[in-house]
Image 1 (cartoon, rainbow, N blue to C red):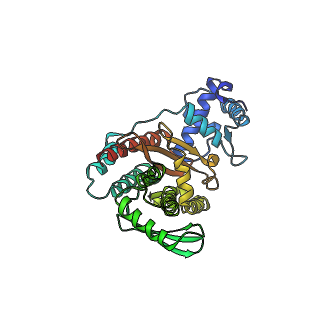
Image 2 (image 1 turned 45 degrees about the horizontal axis):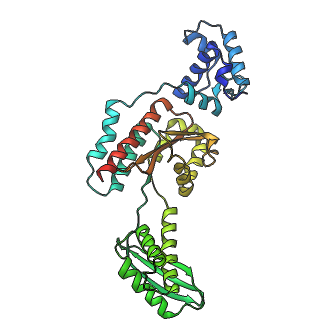
Image 3 (image 1 turned 180 degrees about the horizontal axis):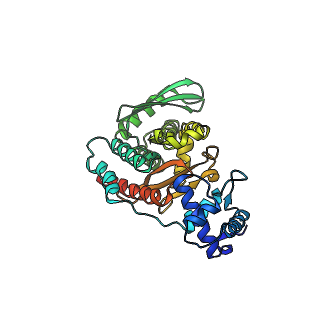
Length: 350
């Protein structure tokens, strides 16, 4: 198989391939040569169509689930279709309005609008909708350090939202109790009300400029405590999933094992976050088909995801859908793109 199977396909093969893929995406069933001969305008005999189908199968673009069955696209075939042959259909006025209404009706926390918009996308696409929520930058209200042992202390960090985080940090055996008290007082008084990023930058600058009225043990303690909290927060993505019930439609009943596997995979939130994170740099919707992503390879599912941005043009999250590889890509891809653009407008309003 060459790098570009399209170069090995003549017009006849391209037409047959397109018919098979579009029919499969429409009804989920393999397509036979006799069906193509009767319903298409190709003016080809079933025997001629079978020869073309055989060639496409040898290229790895089609497969037959049973000896006597018709052909259906492989994951490679779907990828070729999506990348080089698909004619996208822009969301209808009704679909655009349904998504945008969630933005217009925003009245509570931004997470509620994100969840509502994702639920709408899920309903329109008949898939599970998923959104990676912008990571909140914690703001420090209070910080204190408590000795646990000669070489460890507990950093107790209180955020302005009332959240309390405890982190164990390593300290020098020579660190005195007074250094712990000094670090606690300094961090609370000088850094309270600042975001973690701003607090870290300030303490680093003051230490370098010799302006921090702290000994080295105390300043190191503050830097370690803040850095640990900041790093942990950045690694913990917040995900909202809506519409899992869409994965249990009538067609899925015949493939319950795949759906059961998919539902189990949806429980792996951190793995989903990692997958979605890989779409952050994309200019538009990114498509993962079946085994192209390890997370959903067992269930043979596809993911379509697109990034959304804040008012300064920075990517702050990713929105998308998860469903079977037999998705109406031509309709769902632009719908995900439109939702991402709508969420970008929502972030601008925030």
